[in-house]
Image (tube, rainbow, N blue to C red):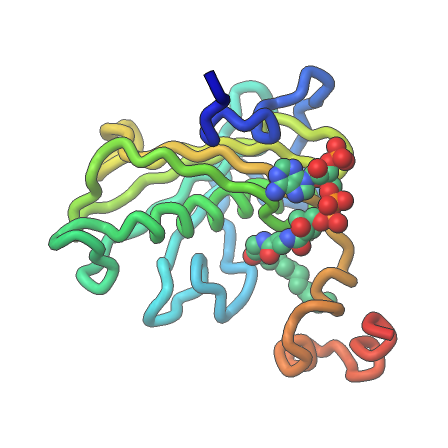
Length: 195
Ligand SMILES: CCCCCCCCCCCCCC(=O)SCCNC(=O)CCNC(=O)[C@H](O)C(C)(C)COP(=O)(O)OP(=O)(O)OC[C@H]1O[C@@H](n2cnc3c(N)ncnc32)[C@H](O)[C@@H]1OP(=O)(O)O
């Protein structure tokens, strides 16, 4: 039988993966993680955003983990009264990306797989957890879980992802120049990266 897309070997933790530790300058377990940008759809306090709130979680194995929370609003519906599925995937992208950033940065999502296990009613709160399971070179393997209304509530979704470490040139070459300039990058730096 052909392998299903949900069992793609590219998301399986390779045998030679090692468990990466939190970066020495990353916040400690229990500490909040501030938004990485003032305009991020996932973590910033913007009207249309997911408005995820984060803290570093304790990982019993000594690795990197985060916990996050997201209140489900009426403007996030797909089916009547239920969260749009794509927004759970977006939430996982943000939460899994945040835990990777405790280890190394910058990284980007290369592959992300979501399993939707139960409907998510508007008005409830999602409690998300993510952990870096292993690293091989530039590749970071991450898993996450979303639960309903409590940190030990019923599981409504799970995710697996592969993130890749990239250089700053990834953004210098690909981001809109005006957004880079708003961060203090000069037009000359942008031109040099793109020449
Ligand atoms: C300067 C100021 C800016 C400041 C901003 C910074 C803060 C930003 C923070 C915000 C962050 C926001 C974050 C966001 O919003 S991330 C937003 C969503 N993600 C993206 O936009 C990423 C788009 N993709 C790419 O740019 C490239 O494809 C990347 C960089 C991912 C790889 O292209 P690259 O040329 O680098 O790598 P490679 O092709 O040589 O592959 C290398 C290895 O990886 C394996 N592989 C690759 N893809 C997949 C896949 N899909 N499944 C399985 N495996 C895959 C591949 O087989 C190979 O394996 P091996 O052969 O080595 O075994």
